[in-house]
Picture: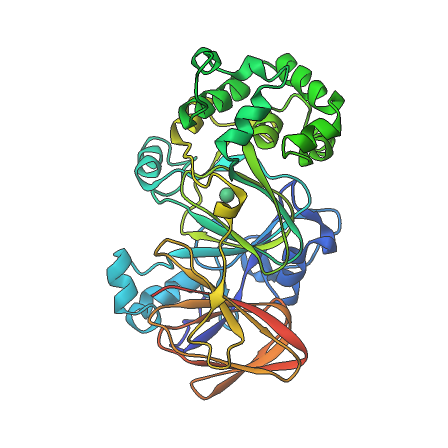
Length: 426
Ligand SMILES: [Zn+2]
């Protein structure tokens, strides 16, 4: 394997890999690890070693695509997918997409995430900031690109995403023990609570000492749950002890998340959109995550101290949209190019990708018309057969495929039905 050069085809089955982070789900409880093992993914230093779940490890993310940190290989030859794409870029990616992005790399990076405990409170810097950071610290910021993302629930999925409406935060800030985080100008008798004040509040929470955070945390857990109900924040007393157990009650990320951010519980098939510079922290569940081709992140809480980025840098990037739970949601629409009407499209307001969700009951069929750019198909659940350019492919849970531009796909679900996600750009 590895030395064989891959021939030009319409479809390549891929070998993907899954990483291990402390917030991932343990062993076989992790959907990302199960899919990776079923799909005969890789581990170690390349495609020669098959991925096997180790029950002692927490598995977090299966990556699909060509980002060099965890690339996909062509299953039959073991060749790096990006090398194959570079060799046949016009046929596989197509001129339209090459012209649009100025390169023949896949412009998106899809992942399956299995989340057992909160991920660090984070944001992904916009293009301008990212290219500056990449220039200054290429080891920490491995590319100059932005990383807006969507997160699509496969199970119930809890997330903190964007900021609450200002009025709700302002009301919470009137509670004892939260006063201390208000900047002086916010305490003037007729002061309005604005995004500028909110930014100061976030900064003060992140910069304050451990004792003050702990004191405030204790205040929150002592306050009557009814008081939080009146303030539209019933989740605070429920989540505070859980987050403190996962990290530490002196972690300032707990305050920022609980007091200032939207808390959402999504059901399978629902999705949120995180713009560049948007604050977020995922809490639990299995999801499909897709982002623009980038790996840049600033973490600032819900993680060990040593892993927190500079507060000043974090706050200078912060942006104030979305500003409500409703604004965080990305609603799907029926996909017009799914000829049997069994496919929905999630189309975020960015140019790098759309995500399709195709759900078929046993024996049902769907045809996806060709698109003018490359696709990745992942079989999230069940099985099916697929026809592309007269060739048949078996689809099992965890199988991942690269599909060349201009190729029409015809699916027939197996007995148990199938759930598939297709990421594409054009
Ligand atoms: Zn993120």
